[in-house]
Length: 270
Image (cartoon, rainbow, N blue to C red):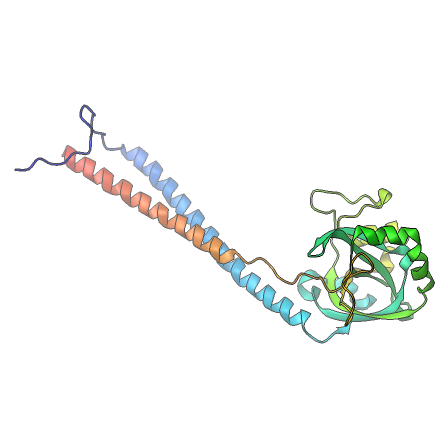
């Protein structure tokens, strides 16, 4: 009769079966890990459905015909869910002397968003408008004298069309806004309003990302380049869900291996 193959090395003492208490503890840990990983996978499935709905909603709003920007009576009810990325239009007069440059990085390089208050017609308050992206060279040219030409044109009424964006409270990533030094890293509307001497109750809780004018030049060194709003959102939830479920499956495989090994050891001992 052929000898039974033994994986133990010569001189090794065969491992004894684990104690029942140890197996119970391992079982509890395995069940807890399996349940936790399945819960994470299911959460990512729900997040996937939410993200797909968000993408569809943003796409619908962003490409719809523009509607009048929310008036003062509607401001209190606005939030990201019911207002973000609506296409809106507003008319009024720019207050160039109170505009703010917020640091930004775009496909055109590193520079600033030009946030200019728009005094709405008929005393409807003020809405900050992101007129577009500029490079540092534009800021230097403004300081050299071009700002005066804009100030002289401030009385001219304008019509603005763009995407409604809710304000960005707080500071930018890893950096804090410094109004005293005129350094801005996020579009914190109340803070910008206070720094520019605007009455907080008269400033809308949203700003407008202005559309690019037809045929407008795209030279951020000479003028703000509008229409750069990013409408793509990362959607990796399916990959995350598969990862969590795969780890849960590995727990089952590991548990099966332990059970098979314990049965083999107990069979040999018997």
